[in-house]
Image 1 (cartoon, rainbow, N blue to C red):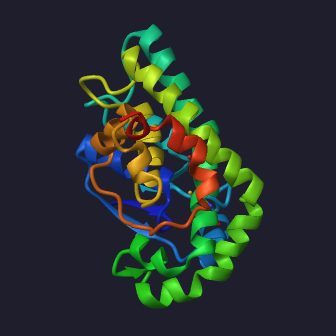
Image 2 (cartoon, protein in one colour; image 1 turned 180 degrees about the vertical axis):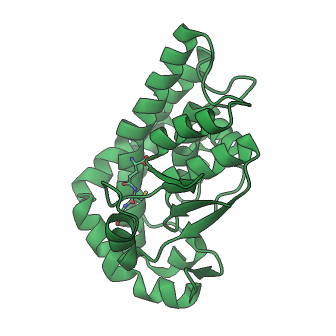
Length: 253
Ligand SMILES: N[C@@H](CCC(=O)N[C@@H](CS)C(=O)NCC(=O)O)C(=O)O
């Protein structure tokens, strides 16, 4: 059985999950307990980085959402995660690269900052248990590891405030790709899942949701990842949301 190792709430893990479902590959998602994850991934699995997702498939372990996408296409070519036409593939790969290198991180910073500011919703991002630890206990243990995640990922007030201010233009970039037919085409591919999972995570935040949910980028996110575990009550200072509020289609009505 194919196993997908992740962390609760992890958007690149959810991107890979959506790819596995698109391929019709049977899998089990195993979310690691945050405080054990680094040691399990580095020492237990012998991976070069200490991050998830890691996919165990066909006797091999592959780390990284982009690497996994390519391995899935090698293992099961149909339906493909990348266009066959070289020019279209190049454009899809550029969108996918941007999704991984430029969109994923600010959204990780936003999410970690929010979880440190209010720990109550942490539980909602977990299943019934995390590696056999009941979710309620795992959620109680999580805050120091979230604080560490905030530090390691430099999710400072300034960084998160500027990431929130940049969301309008980041979603705008996704929408340009949608308009150009690179994303949200007839068949979804790796770039749609990569970007869609990140945007879908944003939709779990109650104060962001009404400001963005009518946008084409969010329709793509819901199409790529129909369900995303987690729901967080309002947590961001209203002034930080002002740039997003003034650009929101709801503001224009
Ligand atoms: N960019 C990598 C994801 C790397 C990453 O930073 N993953 C986070 C979870 S979203 C992680 O594993 N963090 C390790 C930790 O928090 O200990 C990919 O797309 O595979």
